[in-house]
Image (cartoon, rainbow, N blue to C red; front, side):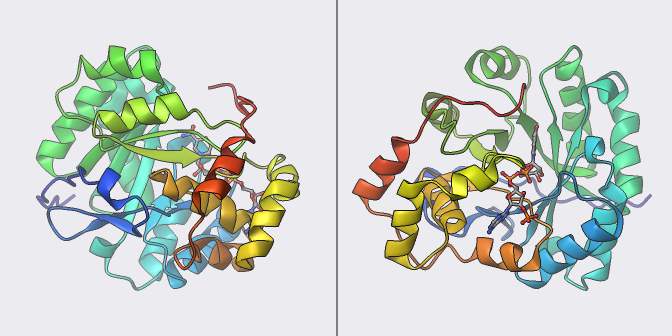
Length: 284
Ligand SMILES: NC(=O)c1ccc[n+]([C@@H]2O[C@H](COP(=O)([O-])OP(=O)(O)OC[C@H]3O[C@@H](n4cnc5c(N)ncnc54)[C@H](OP(=O)(O)O)[C@@H]3O)[C@@H](O)[C@H]2O)c1
């Protein structure tokens, strides 16, 4: 496989850019505040959803070995006709791959059928996570991967981890939504100069419906002539938290990107802060 050398993605200006569409990087690329999540999408449904997302302007796609859809994501990226360098592809190694991370990274490249991965993420803290991260650090130097990220690392997990690696991750992806706001963790990560990306920005499948019926969100949405989903995504990005909502519905996919033409005021942000229940929807 031919591997091209690319400068690493730099990530440092997040706090100053809290409501921008993306974070500029050294080489002119940008890490978008909104990307597209692909958990639970498989086969043609996944290809179509990712194509739809790319067609309507998303430029960051989140997948993982665990989702079993890297092949479909790669297919959609290839079919889109969009310059590969304009798309950020992020994928994840699962803990059962950590002991043989080099092999797993090559496997991800093969399944995605692309010649580099933009952000390679560790899915969870686990035995051998530091060794797996060292493998990612090596392949960044080789040009197979541009940047590293970690997922499901909170304060104690990230403190333990970061002291043992040399390249700072550009992002930490954690469960964050109005019912699980995790503000102290976000502030801790952002103070380290690391981007926070929310998984389950709507609380996840099975919970999103309840969130969208919340009277506080509906009232704010009504005031801005937006949907509750758009208000939630706008709330995230005004906290400088990037989002990767998932959807198989083209209308929702399009709607979720239309969050840069309105602003929540301090009172609205305070009301949404009041919805926190410290209610985590997944175990990790
Ligand atoms: N790192 C990790 O451990 C981890 C864990 C979980 C997830 N993730 C990532 O985070 C991404 C997001 O999580 P998720 O997709 O599971 O949950 P989510 O984004 O919180 O919610 C998705 C649900 O919201 C609905 N939805 C989306 N947009 C909508 C809209 N505008 N109006 C009404 N309903 C809407 C979707 O239904 P429709 O399909 O009908 O639109 C779907 O049921 C995943 O796809 C994955 O990439 C990472």
